[in-house]
Length: 393
Image (tube, rainbow, N blue to C red; front, side, top):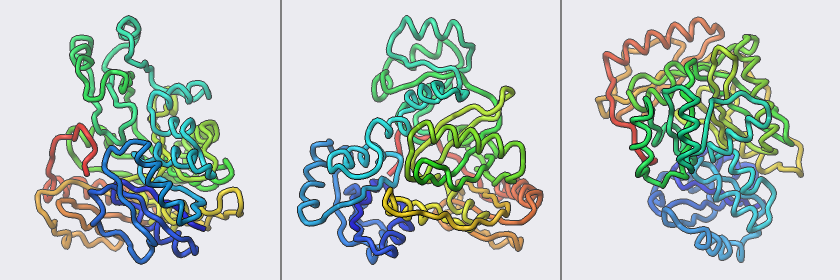
């Protein structure tokens, strides 16, 4: 089988290697700016590049030239910002997998909200911001604070908290991509959770529920220690999240693939925040693997290759607890040698980042370690910087 992997940001090395290990011919389509990144070239038969912001017509021309020499049978988009491109390529080449209608449910936050509400899943109060009269009526009905979000961005990039009407109208005057590219919603207080899943034949065959420390949006805008930890499978929190996530992914029409979905725990129960048709970032894949032994990148590759043609069996999973503490660091190479707990399974080595992943059969042990690391990281390493308005290369 020949698989075209689209990754316009540097990620997905484990996906590429697993595709090659499964016997596939791997073609990589990436951005020109990442042509010299440390891709696993031993797993890649050919690499092709496009300019950042290339048009659909440019992409189709490139894919057509590649398809003259290769019988492409699958297309996989490895980053959030590549999901629409992957859907367009599948429709163009008539490949298995979802097209642009389903892609919008996993990329466009206004479509996400509308679809989830139609499925009966609780969402924050929201509105598009196309029409002044409708926005005015909505702000009269829904109490602030509000959140103004880019509809097709990822993580916390470009999100603004709006205290009230006086701040809203100036924010709507000259947004970077035009008003139609934004969504306005009510800020909902509560703990923020994520569920990471594998889906095959429309069924969620593997899923793990986790709880963040401080909300990711708050970390992105104010700085601090990013923390996440797996929830015990038998907890009430996990049961509610896993069931809501199952309804969400089934209703959104994801047939084969993976998903990282986020929810808020409010007084009214589980509120849907956002979802995606890719693995979670910020080392969440590594935390899931530490807790369960399941590598979501590798399993995603297997699911993509299997498609409708082959039966896929998810691996047996451990039920350990695991968690991550991570922050921007003042030091280019933070010294973590003073952190010696035997529960540490991964030391994150990335310039100007300090991070540790821990694992234990006891969730209380993981919670205690993460609390301790949050205090110590704040003293030893923590640096802050403004949240970017646009994705960082």
